[in-house]
Each structure stands twice: as structure tokens, then as C-alpha cells.
Length: 272
Image 1 (cartoon, rainbow, N blue to C red):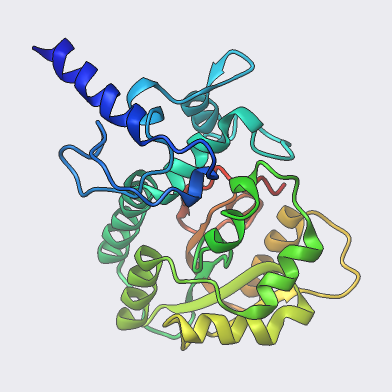
Image 2: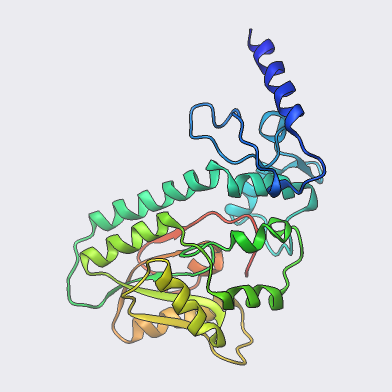
């Protein structure tokens, strides 16, 4: 019975594969193994949820993603071409949203456990890209990270100020405001993107932050060095970093990290 059911699903899936379309352009919905007990997700690649995750240099793409998220795979420049469809399906399907929800649920439980001084000195540091807002409209046109990063085209997109909010992060953001913890926005974006970034955040429901910190013109160091130095300035000014959240390990590593750090999923790019 199980074999017959699987074969039926495979035949249905195979019939729906549209080879002339890019993976993210397919607009059909169908049940997948992961979605049978969950909400239906947009179809990215009909066969991949049933037959596996694709492979990269002999390693399944889901194992490659685990290595990325665990910070065991480092210094990579682009998503392996063979994993483009897998990453696209992960990002646009329900899996990415579920993983993000787990992170934010843990963050909110942590906030509820805090005994706050309420002196206006308690802050929480937020990254921007793939943390407060999502750049999926951009990356869906660039192979979900399989195309080498082009800073010029990405910054042109960022200047539009059109990136949608990540709703789970916004839930945490609003929770912090309600208990008196001040959000600090700390991004590796260049200073000239300040106006478009601030406008984008406000349009997407983020307001009331204490400060918005961007890279000064001419900064040549790593993202990790930049963010840790900015957090040090906050600490030197008497602020207590009760939390810190980002999608890159470079967002949350480097002293002072904050009392608790949270890593959101992002298999589309690496920033050291």
C-alpha cells in the first residue's frame, strides 16, 4: 500500500514538472511529503521533496545546509549550482518559515524569562537583511544565491526600499517594544543606504528603534569586526545588550555578543 501511494505521488509530481520554467517560476500547488500534515507550500521543484534534496560533490544538499547553519561550512562564495532548486524550495516553501518560527519562539520565551531593570539601558541588536526584512524578491532572480553575489545590483535593489518584513522577526520586535527593551538596528549595509533602509523598515512595520547603525564610508574590515566593535560602543556607553539576532554567524560572534544570541536560517549566502 505504501509503495503504491509513493508511486502515485511520483507520477503526479512528474506530470507537473515544467522544464522550461525556472524553479521559482512554477506556479502550481500540489501536496508534498512535508506538506501532507502542514499547510500547502508553493511548488518549486515537484520531484525534489519526494526523491531527496539533490547532491553537491557527493553530499546531499540538506546536509550541506546543515553544515552551513552549524558554521561547519565556511567561506563559501555561492550556493552550489546543484543545490539551487533545493535552496529555492526551502526558502519559498513552509520549511524556512517553520525554522524561523522555532528561533523566534525561543527568543520570546527568553524575553519572558528576563527580570528587567527598566532603566532604559536594556537593548536588543537586530540585523537587517534576512533578519528584519527578506531579500527573497532579489534572490529569486539570482538563483537563490547560486549566482555569485553582485554588490552593485544588490545595492540597487536595497535602494528601492521594497524588501518585505519577516513576520516572525517583527513579532519579536513588537514584543521587545511592549516590555521596554530598545531595538538597535545594526547592519552591514553602507551608510549611503541609510535613508532607503530606514524607509523600508518603517514601511514594513518596524519603528521606534533607538538607533540605526551602518558601515561608515571607507570601512575595510570584516562584518564580524564591524558589528562587534559597534556592540562594544553600546556597552561602553552603558547599555546592556540583552539579546542579539541575525542570519549570519558574523552577526552574533565577536565580543560583546550580548547576553543571548539567536541565529536565523539563511542558506543563500555567507558573510564572514
